Image 1: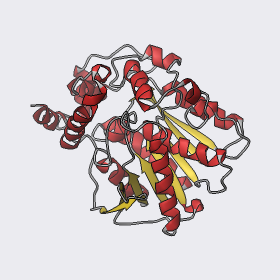
Image 2: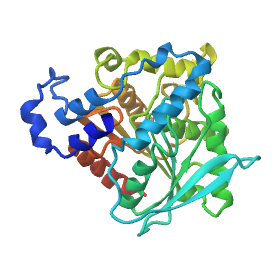
Image 3: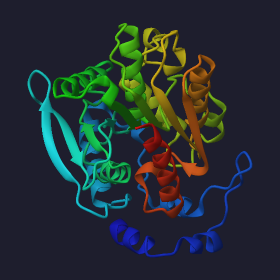
Image 4: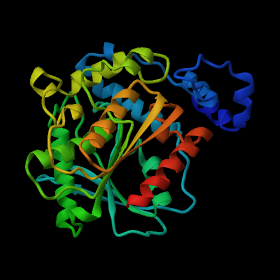
Length: 335
């Protein structure tokens, strides 16, 4: 039934929603995109925080199947060739390569999907990565890192390091690697950079695109409280994600785990941070951008005030497509 509704939904012109969908109260002077508002109302409501750990794997499979079936991302104009590699000592970690019809840069992008470190997969973000690869005319590699709570921090970071090293062993120097991710994936991309800095490595990636990143396990910013529920991602769920991932008193103080604890004089890669106005994580992303700016790093924050957490994977929404195309143009400039 929901699949049929979504098929009909995307046949409706975007102006229809502006006329017939009741506007929510403005937040910080901006109105929530009404097509996005209508789409969110069609999404299944699951309180993840009530699910026992031994049932999360089954729920995850259902959510992944639903997201693959009910595509929210636009497809590509031309086929994107894909090749699956397997990395790690046991060759059991999937790293999917995306080669668009036209490649216009020597740099490659190592991508990490979002999902609070608990949900999603390479498959749920397959269309998103394909779209980005084609728009950027760049080769992408998307990692199937291990998820929580079965695999706590730093297992996902270890997987990211393995993927990064695999790229280096296969002919890509750090100067030719950019890291990118959305939500938890953006945290993983930045966490990878923080880890390399903490280890005094000179192998930092050339750039990074962090799309509405998870930053601080405290979940105490103003936007967390103001947008605690009603905009797809909730504060309650975010607290649960951090706990399942491995939040602890020790980790909260660790600059690799808590991005807002960054304490280094080392230069960071050229960074673009994406924030959305109706996202509980918005303020943390802005704080991280300010932190990098204050220490003298090259950083640009691109803010989309009428968007929500997850819009980068919902480009069938007109306003989301416009926003994604905009930040990809900016990203292309630093690739």
